[in-house]
Length: 139
Image 1 (tube, helix red, strand yellow):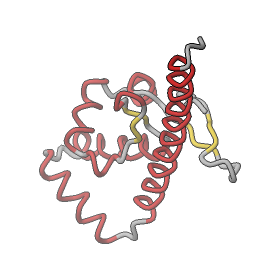
Image 2 (cartoon, rainbow, N blue to C red):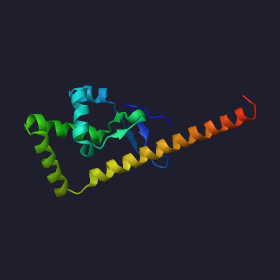
Image 3 (cartoon, rainbow, N blue to C red):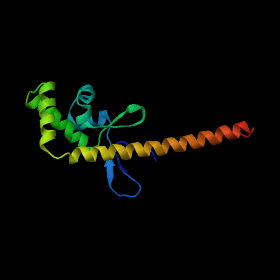
Image 4 (tube, rainbow, N blue to C red):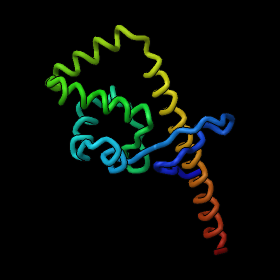
């Protein structure tokens, strides 16, 4: 099953819940935050943003990650906090609130990784079958 960027996709085969994934360019257009700033924020606040990674470690944002990015941008621009101060504020908020959002983000990551493993196993099986056919002299 291929990822559909910017479109809903099933999280798991047994659920009907959908998650939309957006690229950096799409998030930049949605939020008005420059793509370079988004990449910088991901480097500085990787754990907080909890992005999903696609093929080639491509950054993929779900709706919750977009909301976290907006909150982060607010801390840095509207409230004028430094990166260090923003980290401290987020760490304090993390300890004050239950980690339900973090749990949901981790579950999304697990689902994404499981899907990638399934795709890799399919590719592996096809490759082994092709190698076997080639070894037997069949195209």
